[in-house]
Image (cartoon, rainbow over all chains, first blue to last red; front, side, top):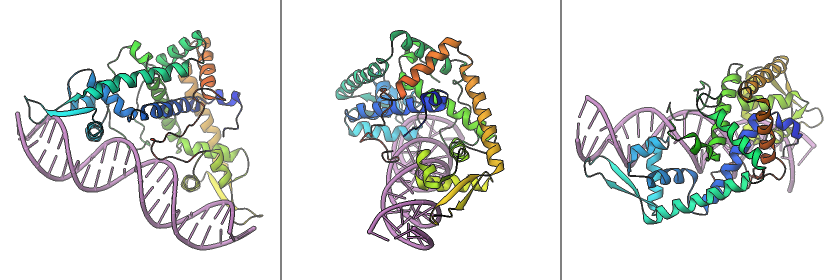
Length: 162
Length: 162
DNA sequence: TATTGTTATACTCTATAACTATA
DNA sequence: TATAGTTATAGAGTATAACAATA
């Protein structure tokens, strides 16, 4: 494992964020996995449940490539959580709707997710918890130092500028 | 982009951690890229610089698969930053040493990394900054709620239990 | 027989390109 | 000609399996 002292780890901001992100993703994945979903499925399904969207609109909302959206919806459809139906006004377009089971799954998943967040943040005293979230928000939003997705020329191939 | 309000984003812990982790990784990658390194190269090189290790020991320290270590060291050797030499006591084993250029690169990279961290955390008031790091450390280390790497049965294939 | 490091290869994820059907 | 969605495929990353040299 990690043989470093707390002092050393405290100075390794990359590690702190990576570990927090990965461990939380693992917990989320495990929790949603119980419901037969992964995190991406949930993101898409929750957005689909919030109103009628086309596949393309959903892809844009969820910051997914349209080909990734195809795979995701194939999965959600096979699981009986969502349905695609042709738009009556433009026969190229597919409208995505959540099924009854899908709507229930979103609600259930939201409960599970809130439980995980509470579980994680619950170990912090109230004030520390507030400051943590304030600080993260400050770093990550607007013109914070971690807001920009500056494309790095050496980085692996990912989705182009969103 | 993200059309959500700050309020909504504040409630999305996964997003906050993922974004922080990814954006910081992008900044780190860009900064280290200037020096011809990626983050993994730096991690391995820094550990190699801290003492003589075999390839296997380095892999364990850096939590990398031994086959990934081969690729990493191939790169570092080609860049003239590290060297492999056979151990005099066990001819199966390769000792990894940093070259003079490699040692300098580690020192330079450390400066660059400290600069990035300072740049990021510098936007926070001193006390908020302290609380943020304390809270992250609490979550991520020891028996914190984000310390465990519980293998998730639905997760994609990654390195086995480390 | 077990272990270190290497090579070959398979698997996952996600994007680009080509295609179908509409507009 | 342009667009929504699909399919086929390629690229990047990282793992497992087979292997060579050595213990």
